[in-house]
Image (cartoon, rainbow, N blue to C red; front, side, top):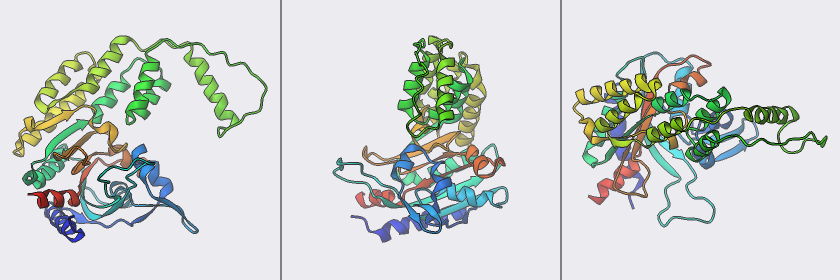
Length: 353
């Protein structure tokens, strides 16, 4: 069992390295207002957050993550460019129902993080290279994705605006997304929805139900998504290879999906910038679907560093979240990218050597 003091010591080393990289230390509150924050996290984090009610503040949550409160702080008056770092506990429920793993994960653990707010084309490469350098002694596996490419491909689908919006909304929920894609790829079965005159029941209001019925009626006249587009999207999501090979596959697929050309070339530039910092892109695995099961606020590059422990979460992870700054900045967006490292997992790796 690794002691908390050993984990915190590694966290302090990481914090010092982040400060050396130009970051200012920041310490968000542990108890946060739930109403705003929980809407910005993915389903996984929302399901595992510790939520309670305060008689004065209303619904509050124990800090499940640092990025959102750091963005809130920056959007309230931070300058550009800005680099922030932090070290502290986050809190997440780890076990569900009657199923308990043999080695349950901590529900309270340290995160050390670095966030960069800058209109700099090399910001992604800067953050990835910083994390790569700090984690190099641990023999971890680096993976990268790019939600920009997936989102551009979905926007290019020849479907109605309502269907496109539904797919974009659920892209971070792979099972739900797959069901929607299958539904939109098949002919619509007409539904007979007679007006029974019965009162509305359930949680939806009358106008909401009427809007839903109107949507179902409109869908009856929509053609299915052509099979070639379903195939293109499936092939895109399945790309998983060393970054140079993945880039070759993406460029080939861009001949069929021209809308992703710009995002693919941005990826190519990022890999060149990473190589210029002494990292061989062939050692990075590019997984097209990488960001789909992490934070829903990642809308560009995402990355993770994992150990040879299948039951462990990533030792480090991060990504770009420009849209989050627009949401929290009332429309005033600032390009932003960052990530976190779990000092506790590094301590376990050091103890096992």
